[in-house]
Image 1 (cartoon, rainbow, N blue to C red):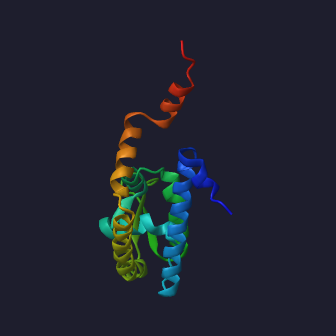
Image 2 (cartoon, one colour):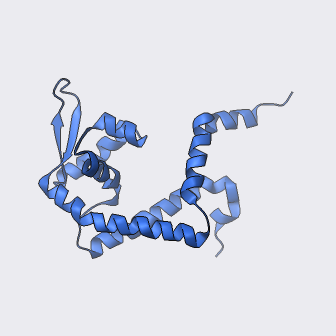
Length: 162
């Protein structure tokens, strides 16, 4: 059967990016299981941020990652249940949530580090094999969209020509 997303070309760009992301995440999750590490790949960004910065507020993490605080909150709840992270209220603002790895979470992240390093190397090799710098292209696309959003681009394209 033919690959309709490929046939759709630029029209299906976002769908192809999501499919690629989902595929990579599923394959990395398979390696976690093979290595005996109980870690959901949806926890990756929170785990990496806390391994680097030790403690972060939900808001600071969301700002640093460019995603919404509710998206962080949705993930950290499952991580708390799994014993990976702990949550403390802020010192000045008790509504603020400060996240940090538990000792068990720090051990899990330490066990994941070789996998994450290998993944990074494999991605770089994949880019070389494909003959492109996909990260540079992705960065350029993101920068263009920061200058002019897709909403603005679509509105402009749909504006009746005088």
